[in-house]
Image (cartoon, rainbow, N blue to C red; front, side):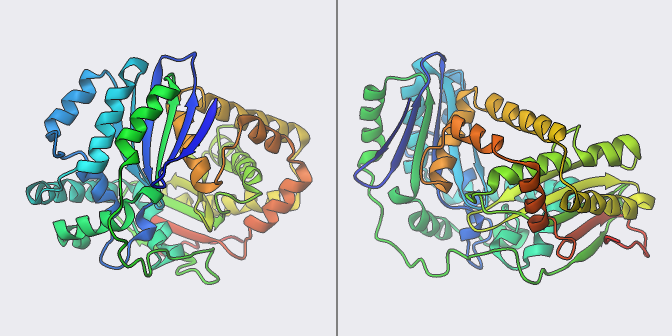
Length: 422
């Protein structure tokens, strides 16, 4: 049973009661991420996520950790380009205590100067961890190659320089600017009493008033696939055992009418062990151990990216094979058998992902953020079922344009390697 309520202060409350379960997932979502950061603010969204766990007016950091363990639950947070979310998953009888804990972090975090100084070192280590992981790092470089100085092309974690310059004043100003009732979604899925819980939600979030609105100029940087990307083919030499490569094509905004078709197309191309790329590149040719494709979607644009890791002598062949499979999809319709298998795979992944309270809570928030309404599972399944081979071929022509792709390679790249199709 789905229910949406908007509190008087603008907080959106989304509830889905699942009485057959014994757990509850609660998430507080702020509509702010790295794309809202102006120059000099790089990494602030993610840093605030860290600082929310470092103590409140009522609890120390260790008390927060001890309390969530005592509840027998899981508590965490994440930052994306467009959102920051804090969530708890607990047994149903612990839901009220979990809501109190979550609200305390969200409303009363102290952001002490001492904790800020200490946490800077933690985030700097996190940045170094990404740079030491070639699979993560090549994706970061790939985004920069496509988007350049746009905030979506910059790392969510920020950079060492921006982290070292962060002050308490910067954090408090950013929180006041973005953490506001009208920018907040509370999503709850699981077994709970709706009437009792709503009273508690009103008590924890209904009295919250945002501070006078600061200047918002320049905070949202619009983006679509650039007419001219910053690097069509770029090589980043690094002494590794493999070359890690990303080939990027146009994607779609997250709320686009063709989004289900894009998911089917991605699954056919590289979304599993039966996908064309996995079968051709790994199983038939032995060119790579890891190869896959994935979609990245934003409010106003998106990417379809293929990733592979291979030995230096085969990087050209891997890129060519990726382009060959993309070209095949634009020129020849998939068979009915392949399409039906892909639809079944996609619907199965979708349904399994929504069996638990965490998956449902995530979906509640994302539907509200990107669709402005609740999208039922039945609606999603029908949209997938409507996809035809002809429709998929037409969509492939729009997205898998071999005149408009970007290749990024990281590792021991041969000097004369041609990282392009043809």
